[in-house]
Amino acid sequence: MELEDSLFPLLREVNIGIDAYEVFQDAEWALLIGAKPRGPGIERADLLDINGQIFAEQGKALNAVASPNVKVMVVGNPCNTNALICLKNAPKIPAKNFHALTRLDENRAKCQLALKAGVFYDKVSNVTIWGNHSTTQVPDFLNAKIDGMPVKEVIKDDKWLEHEFTEKVQKRGGALIQKWGRSSAASTAVSIVDAIKSLVTPTPEGDWFSSGVSSAFLIAANLNSGNLFLSCLGEGGEKWLSHHFTMYTAGLHKWKSLWYSRRHSFQHAMQIKGRW
Ligand SMILES: NC(=O)C1=CN([C@@H]2O[C@H](COP(=O)(O)OP(=O)(O)OC[C@H]3O[C@@H](n4cnc5c(N)ncnc54)[C@H](O)[C@@H]3O)[C@@H](O)[C@H]2O)C=CC1
Ligand SMILES: O=C([O-])CC(=O)C(=O)O
Image (tube, rainbow, N blue to C red; front, side):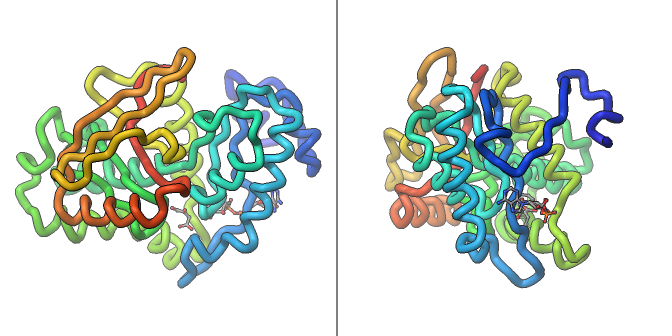
């Protein structure tokens, strides 16, 4: 009822069902949110036993009945691993069509940087979230900008950036659960909309956004030099952007261990530019 009352310009019909093979029929977009949330003191990874199965089944159903070019945004946690499970169960759907939601982390990072700098959040750009949607993620302030200037030139407080900021973004989900007893809902919904808008509309010149995509798209990485070169495969009408990033030491260290220990899992956030 609330969906109908919201007068969404693209909403034509609401169908409710419990059979994934019915509800995914010819779907062009699938936002996979239905999954158990964590409670206080629990890590997202602890949900895998319960939630993993959901995404295996949904992957199979999408593979069988959705549009062959369906785009899938996995939200249910642990979202990176669930996205990989879903992808592996849907071999007919291009792997590049699967995303894990890291946009909420990007938005959280932007909010913290804006608050610290005393600017409105729309002045913050070029924010990257490296790694999993978990407490191991690395919100990248080194390549981020405030009003077009490197963050470190605006916020001259390295201790805050490297510790307080990083930890705040990493643990924001848990902090919300501690406070309210349940996980974020409104900001998650907004971030899903933001993520999809970013995927289907041109990225503002010089900016980028973060989304969790399969590590199969990382074709080159020079981790030893301090420069991380990421390159994504471009297919169809999609324009993937390559970037050079200088990671700050702690970030590089974390990224390195993520890359080596879990290189085959679905956990790398990266920048994507342009239309889907
Ligand atoms: N990636 C991200 O940034 C975020 C991820 N999440 C995750 O999203 C998921 C949903 O969170 P909430 O909406 O707060 O939980 P909720 O408990 O309010 O809703 C979960 C819904 O999933 C449904 N569900 C249960 N089993 C299902 C199945 N097999 N197939 C389809 N639907 C099923 C339930 O009926 C319920 O309506 C959780 O895993 C949570 O951790 C939440 C916030 C942010
Ligand atoms: O923390 C959680 O479990 C829900 C979530 O993913 C977030 O709010 O980032």
